[in-house]
Structures are given as structure tokens and as C-alpha cells.
Image (cartoon, rainbow, N blue to C red; front, side):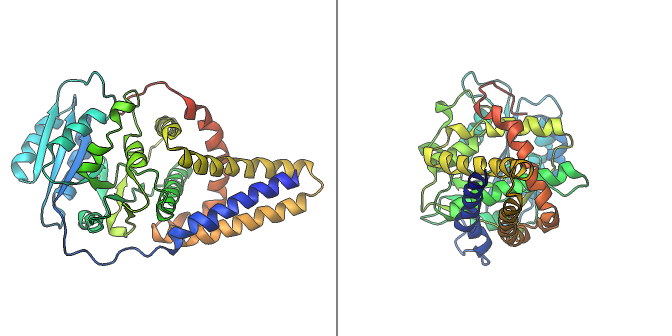
Length: 364
């Protein structure tokens, strides 16, 4: 049992030393490029009247020389159409598309997103959601400045707002840990996903790697699969300047959170094989780390050695967490990370069946 636990600990430590330290060592861009491209921002919305009223003005009033904001109003039953029509007359850079029919082939957000991208007049796209608010009026500038002839995909950070309670802490920690992985993998030339709440890419990426016809049944994961198909060793950059963050509100109940995560984790089985291997090995070793530790403490005579191995892994994780949490402004979670990380045992067990599910859900 101790040998098995030692192997799992070694795997976990290697991930932190080989992959996750890269984000801790990464130096973000500090100065904006002088060649800022025109940007088309695409937002899909379904019954998002309150969110659009609250968040859209901050996006329409960004400090950026040339950009448009395309809002695709997807079959909303609220007063979104009326409100957007009024705002369109107030903001010349706002473009609205109303959808009153359902696609027979493209499920979820695929159809409205396709409509929005086809309506974009600029070659550089920036995606977010209606319930997201930028952390500053330099959000577009920070994301767009990393575009170049070589860099065609920019991965941003989309944290959740801080609220009281364990649920909020865990949701924020899980979002941070996901970002730690996809940022670190990107720095290791293994980019595998992006978060659609804060993601930029050149329009040609979408048309060259349009994965929607391959997975018409999926209700989510569109951004993941596009980046998984299009990213290579050279064409992807990450942006972690705090002024580039895009904030949203976390779910308020466990039921809502599990429903959201079930849709998200069901996409992973469509990733490239190398990504599935590295992500699967880490998740499996993460799960077994706690399972074998508990078994070692209860049943093994060498429980003290097991406790030592547990502490070594926790210390190495803490060193990486300390720096990366500070960079992503999640440092208030640091003192909770052992407890929050242990809760991943329940997280994995709860969502494991959903990684293989094929049941369709709605995107909103």
C-alpha cells in the first residue's frame, strides 16, 4: 500500500514541478503592442436582460481605438430585444442580431455563436458571456496586445467574484485550478482548452477548425474543442494581467453547480489523445492520492511514512499555489487550499459518471 501511495505522490509532485511551476515562473506582458488590431467582441445571450443591463456598458466603454460588440440575442423570452435595440441607437459600436428560430443541426450555443462570428467585420475575435464583467477598461487592450503573425489564440482568465461560504470558495478554487492547468499546459506547448468567458482568436481559426459539424449533439464545450483542435506549439499565448480578467458570479447552490459541471466535464473525452492522457493521469493520481492516503492511515503499519509523503506533496503544492494564487488574485484561498483540494475527492467521485454521459442538456 505504501509503495502504491509513493508512486501516486511521485506522479503528483512531477506534475507540479514539470507543468504547474511554469505559471508560477511566467512573466506577463506589461506593455501594450503599438499595432493593436481592430477587434470584434461576440456575446451570445439567452434571457439575459439583467446581465446585459449590468455588464454590457462596461464592455461598450472600453479604452480601445477600434472595436465592435456583437450581441446575438438567442430566442429570448424577456425584454432583451427591446433593451438591445435601445442601446444600439446609443452606442455606434454595438451590433445586435436577433434569432427567432432554432437550428435543426447545431445545438446549444453553436448556432448563435456562428451567427455572431459571421457578422463580425474584423479578423480578430474576443469572446465573453453576457453575465461577465471586465475587471478594467483595458480588458480588450490586454487581450489584443498579444496577437501577432504567430500568435493566433489568446487564453484569458475568467474568475468568479468573491462571496461568503464554502461553496463560493470551492467554485473559485476549482476555476483557479482549471486555469492553473490550461495556462501551464499552454506554457509547456500543450494547449488544450480555453474558457469562452475570456478567449480571443483570429476569425480564420474558427473557419479552418470548425468543429461544430463533428459534434452537433454537444450542448457545451464548444470553446474547449475549438482550441483543442486549433492550438499548436507556437500559435497560443496566455494573458494573466489583472486588468484582463473577466469576472462572473458563481452558482449559489450545489445543485446548480453540479449541473453546470456535468455539462463541462462531458467534453473531455473528445480531446486529443495526448491531452486526455496527461489530464487523465493527473486526475486519477489526484483522486488516488487521497484514497490511498486514507487507506494507508487506517490499515497500514507504515502510516507515519505515509503521513510524511502526504506532507511533502502538500508542501510542494503549497509553494506553487502561493505564487500562482497571488498572480491570479486568488491569494485569499491559500490558507484554505488543503481543505479545498481534499474536496476534489468528492468532486471526482461525483462527476466521474458524467465524463461518459451522452445525455443532451440546454446551454442555458
